[in-house]
Image (cartoon, helix red, strand yellow):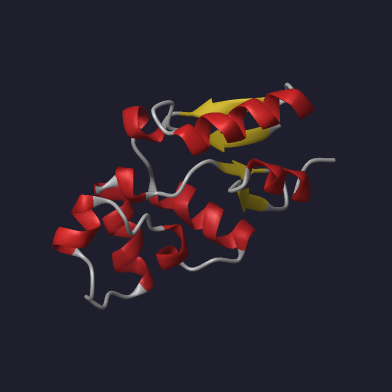
Length: 114
């Protein structure tokens, strides 16, 4: 089963979810803006994507530009920032058993779909 970190108000996230639906029905949707995020979830995404926390940040968001742009934080601090400001998380992120992918464009999902 896959997990999809999804924001229904985001066009790219909706495109990624539709693409995933065309390939499989074996997934659960995580609406992280509504449900919140936990440290373990972010760490799992980082481990399975082999990315750094800063790679998951939406730098075009106002909250990033006003509060975090140009500042240096360590990885744990960035994880806390994402948890406190979940709107900063790139989406959609599809997490499988061994690997995860930021599905932008949506076809990147093919990298983890069997």
